[in-house]
Length: 239
Image (cartoon, rainbow, N blue to C red):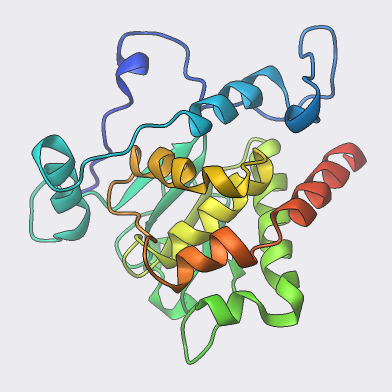
């Protein structure tokens, strides 16, 4: 049974959802660009960036956060959550349990052999593996070029209105670092605000957690965010 987390409170109240940016549009009077860190972003993307930079830390140990965490990691519960939408049409989830929810691209942060059979036939971007799985070391292969290519492919798919699933076996770490790398580059999140980026993602998928391990170090210190940001901007203006 697929159960999605309820939308943030602002969306439940009927307010517009700043985290749900639409397909990229070339700048116009209706979509002004900001200067500095927001260059190349639509107004919706700028709003999402502000939401990321001001995200509040999620309590995963008590209350609703603990309940949501349990629903995402315990497959025995009836309201088990296999995947969550992070921004519009970008989903983070488990490879073996997530069904085909209209996806047009699957980014596999694990061996494709672990994908749900329902996902077969969908275009797949396989991230580089080490000893059968994605690791910080494998993401650095070929100067991170294979990761960069996957992130560019994700961006192109999302901007044309496609639906992307990034998955690993648990939907908590390997897939989370890929999603956060994409968001860090697309929304130009600086090194000193990476913790806010994690808070933003955890507000959608509580079990996504990189703190205190090599994946966190990769995202914060090794990932070539500025370079990927430039590649994304160049790709946008070619289309």
